[in-house]
Length: 226
Image (cartoon, rainbow, N blue to C red):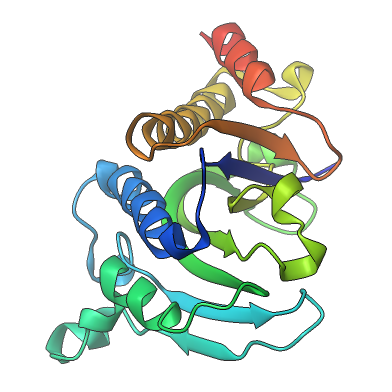
């Protein structure tokens, strides 16, 4: 069964005022990995940029107090006012007024290998795998947001969406499918290790909503695929 996949990040001696800088650092490392496949084409100009930003008060049941969706497609090439989606500018605007009971969410995209079914009822292993954009949400938590849930979630949490691009029953994986899953795992681990190296974190945890830590499992799976 598909499960939500997260990466939680904790920082040593963390001060809330440093949250914008910490978010900028994680977003930049994500952009590096997102752009590792090469310069984006006109259909994917949002790679390396923020596609949406939101600020939530109190907890997740509340409506956003701030929300901005950026246009980064081909129409934006002729629009001189596209600087807002640059990482530094998007974080600066969304966090202009820091409140300890708020969460600051930024959406970005990267390219993952995903199956595209030819028709209804087709088996996943018979699908055509294509490199497609996938949404990732990077969230910074105020210490009072959602009753201090940052202690469990991390000062920053990365929400990758469903774990299906990385997890599949080994018995159901053929050689070709294994290659695509391996590429997705390598990209996920590259981002995780890049954050660990460059963002000054004290600890990290790659986990699913069901509570299972995944880092060791993904590395073991990658070794089996090789």
